[in-house]
Length: 205
Figure 1 (cartoon, rainbow, N blue to C red):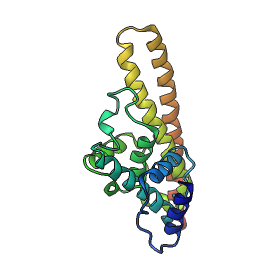
Figure 2 (figure 1 turned 60 degrees about the vertical axis):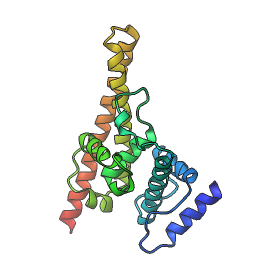
Figure 3 (figure 1 turned 60 degrees about the horizontal axis):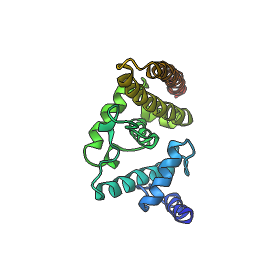
């Protein structure tokens, strides 16, 4: 698998204007897991890195579609236990941050992804410009937003249990609310950093 992933990365780096990199689903899963963990195998601040990530999203989505499953399954968000994974959260936030195109998703996931990201994404006026002048910070913002999506999902699940006056569930709900608040603050700070860099770039230009 590691060798195959290396070939996929090499193919991306050799292209002048790289299209999404083709790869087997197993390699795609590895790329997505590493991206979600904040350790992508290629720099998404480069066209080549984004080509690798987009190819992974397409390949894995195709494999899931062939198996008769919707991926990412955003309809499960806030409804089922562990309704959304870290990988799914990273992909959906990757769409709005510009690292993944909506066209890379399959079926209803395209519209659902945009609905979710627009609801949870902090205000950054020009994401395309941000990708040029503040990409490292934009990557951090993407990761913070992914954490927020996960924490929001957990909070909604715990809120359902707490309605039954389960004392432990109420305490877990309070802790979850604190984590969600911290992730929202992380998003706000990073969004301000990105916006500030965009404005500085415009003044300098």
